[in-house]
Amino acid sequence: KENESLRGVKVLVTAAGTVEPIDPVRYIGNRSSGKMGYAIAAEAVSRGADVVLVSGPSALIPPEGLKEFIPVESAREMMDAVLREAEDSRIVIKAAAVADYHAKEVADQKIKKNDKELTLVLEKNPDILFELGKRKKEGQVLVGFAAETQNLIENAKAKVEKKNLDYIVANDVTKPQAGFNSETNLIKLIRRDGSIEEFPLLSKRELAGIILDRVIEEKKIQKI
Ligand code: C5P
Image (cartoon, rainbow, N blue to C red):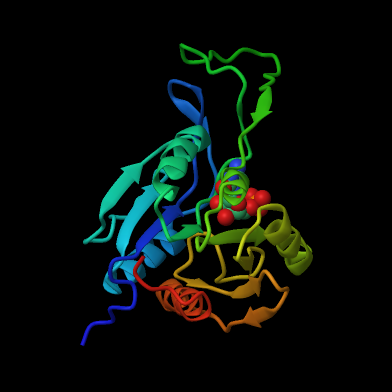
């Protein structure tokens, strides 16, 4: 029999990296492939959830059976979609690699090269997850991701507090076969109470299942 553990539950997932335009042909981006977020969305669909996937540009094909697929480009576009969709979502999982900055001015025309230096001024993007944490509803579960290259646990724990999260999935992106673009991931699941669960190298789909299992069990998720 199918796993129906999320039947009738709305799950909002974000995936891939945002891209921040510089001019009509250039952007600032990052190495996120979207594989972790798409795996979570697919796993939630297979458990019967109403899944909304908000994704930055990705080469991946959205999983079948989504309630809605919302493609976005910039962090600010992602924020609009996420704040709207989070309103009635029971579980929000933010696997997207959101750009921290955008170009202050986006040129109307392609920027021409010359012999001089080019300076780009970057302005801070809003922190979508922080905004979600501020607006968190009774019973809503917020899961963040933390890709770090140093002080993994310490930085991840600080984010749980600052962004009012229930869980953070921390991965050390300096490890081979973990993080960006790989089929596998090496993660630690950190709870709000500070407890840490560490997993061996597993496929992103298997990890998606584990993350959902923990949330369902520990937060007593049922249809609301
Ligand atoms: O602060 P940091 O970017 O490391 O936090 C990572 C988590 O916060 C991820 O879940 C990411 O999706 C989210 N985030 C966000 N908006 C930003 C930056 C990060 O939602 N501007």
